[in-house]
Image (cartoon, rainbow, N blue to C red; front, side, top):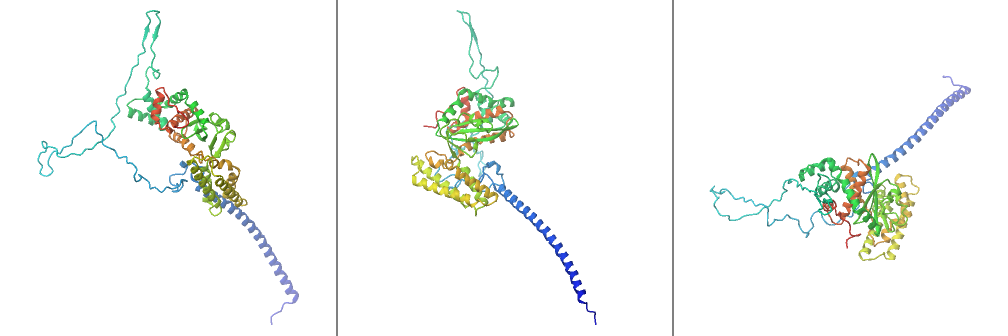
Length: 498
């Protein structure tokens, strides 16, 4: 019969086992506490990494259609098919039915005629040299003749002595004749058309002019042609004339863009209309904006983006470019379509207001109907307030953007809806300024990414002002440059064609 432990022994054993279990539990509690602390740290890291991934996805998803990034930054492989905010038309690409064709036609008096008779019969091989022509078919080839030898004109400044008083008088040379040997106005116009009109780099422009025109110019001469053109534009009074015309315009589009020059960053500032362009350079300060002489004291409407640097121009009314706002709204909706429905609705409201303003302008109305405008304002304010409320307590990056954009719509209602309160003016977007200032980037890319000197950038702004304005009036760049180098620069006759 086995020994049965006494009650005191059993109690001691149980107490020992209980002590061991307590030690195990305490160790597990410590381990669980450490694990919970580690889980908290890991959860924080996961939250931070999730936010980081979300931010990177937002950056990756941004392009020229849903942000203020330029189209050139989209990349050739990342451009979405629907990145444009333009409405898709119903017409198919290419020539439209009923549109006049542009077929190359035969001319009645060709410079040269070459007859191509058959030498022998294709059937029996008989000689056909004496046979009469029974039918013929005309073909014409239009080609370019090789560059002729340059024309050299010698100007002889003669001096004559008066037989009466004995004074010697020297004849005057034409205005474009100064150096003992120089290139004429046509050569200068063609060269400036390459480097300033079409942004061809200096070395390649030199090769082109030598090959196409048959004159042997140097790269140094080609590099200085823009400066010569700029000096002629300044002396003609063109910049002052455009400045005064712009100050009389009811609305002016303004923009600015950075440009690399002399190892630093400068800005090219623009004030323009559909028919006028005025560019000048400086930094991005209010003083640099005013240095162009167009916007200080201007009393019309300045159409611009959201850059705060224009805020000091209090004499004018301001209109916020709605296309920039549409991009921001699209960015919100693209990243959180379920939670940013207000952004899509606000974009639709802006388009509706744009169409209403365009219809009123076509009918010659100076204002929208009061009921239409009141309805637009009511829905506008409700959407902006709802967008702010929906993201007020959310802590995601998109929610932060939504709060910022909704507050912008609430705070700048007058600027944003200026196109609706002034439907007589086409001020829905600042696209006119963006198109006009784009050659700055084209020239910069063709010039190795920068201008060597600040004066070079300033010369570019002056010549581009001249060529852009002439082009807007339907005058080719080459014709405008020919007039410039022949001493009678083209000047705009007014604000717009009459």
